[in-house]
Image (cartoon, rainbow, N blue to C red):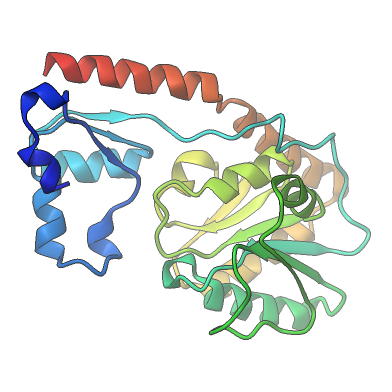
Length: 256
């Protein structure tokens, strides 16, 4: 971002696309990152919490363009609960993804529900975090395979400490999977607590565990209500809408 400031006007209008608050999770000096946010360059970002943060940090305009999900790729017919209760999560050894907390939650759930099936996928094999033998881990799956993971789950678990948007939450919901998520930023735009999801505090293993048990213990008809409500939200996110909003934001930046 710093070197963009040196570009002459003839190179085009400058716009800053922000997908996360790097001052909270970066190897760069915080002051250096903060300085880029303080610029008057128009900004485009993907979640309401980021809009608020950037408005507080800069004098430039901030436009909201939420991410979306391809419902031709991530989808499911109307579903019923699995015959064996099943939970899924994204595996990543990046600390902000909260996998160590997710594993604590799952270990507690296994004591209550020994038959619980646990699925996950991730871009890379586990190196630093040891997964229990009962976890069914798909490494670097194709996009079509990811849909299959989501659609086998009764609950999708997100234990992140910070998410710019939380795309896996929306993808799971597109596959009609209710969510239990931490209040970590982006997912709070997407889900409605008690309707298609339960929201819990970051690192709160007790509340996360109770929320999952609550979803898994629902009557089948009530779980279907959660499932259908999850899908309805995901279906409202269109890439066509996102493209139009992004184009509008770019055009408005020409006037600033």
